[in-house]
Image 1 (cartoon, one colour):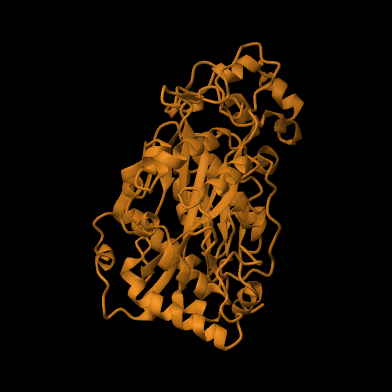
Image 2 (cartoon, one colour):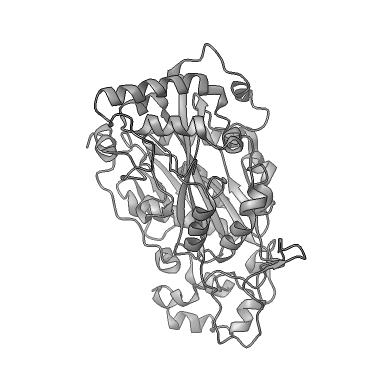
Length: 484
């Protein structure tokens, strides 16, 4: 948040960021209280456990990070009782028994080894064994396993007119995990071409991520079929995925990595983070990311969470500890969503270091026209997968012309306030300077115009809107532009 307010830019909300360090101390404490979850392990454990708080103080009172080996997310093993495919008879046939509490704490699958390749029983951080997962089969009931319900069908959805909604930083609404919009076909083709050209720089996976990638793919396809049943479906035996928008069929049991199935059907970026049982921290082990600015999969794969966020201002000093603790405890049934924003010339999707488009950020071009300035918002969700226990960070880049703000009450004023008074280190990181010579005068003109036309009160002082995280009558405009 810049200057204690949520900046709201047009149809795309400039959402509160938990990664970018723009919260004041009181707001950070409130957020951390919201994100703090109880330790999951049963009190019936026969093995003494360490303190769930891995921090300690040095002689100067500074916090030192030790490890999170004994800190786990809440177990989801009890959800098996609600999954029809996992019957008692089936469990007996496969000789599956309920493990002792101490077994699920000590026999944790290694970071870099597939669960099925282990010679002795091993468990995921959410207390599932290979035998459990094998018994569940393909496309189990992930709604029951995760505690996040499937979305409601949206039969009136038209892919040719669809416009993305703005979002708050909040618990994810199940209907909106993977939101499609009218650029679907164009974006799929663009992403496929990026993978063809750049290979492992945009799509890669390391050993040990196999289960998480398959699980993620199945959950995504299951979501699409539930939310948009007039466009997507699975065959009765769950071996063929039909995409009615692209007129394609994907045979799911062919030898093909799940990330490529996602690439061909879901215009969304996915980063898979896995827990290393030797220290309890999370590492980037697999992903398909085609819309990164200034980095790519190839430059981040294998890194620990704090290493990935190294360039972010104040991350190490103010957020590293809370983020590591949050990742260690994130439940499967409490995914969140957020937005990260910036201003760009045109609509750059993928811009790795050294990309020619970076030249636009090095100068304030006098010939730059207002219609080329766009708000870019990366709408993001963070959720834990129930079986593997992996944490998935997924996002998509959405672009809104700056000119769209002109008729949106209060938005030009809020945007202008952020550009003029934003925290210098944060604004430098967002790199809006290269368009400010065009954006700021236009926004100032629209502020005066809105006051003159009675859209906002005279001398209105910028503050969080009552309609936050949206602006007045946003839904009316959103529906009108889609023809509802």
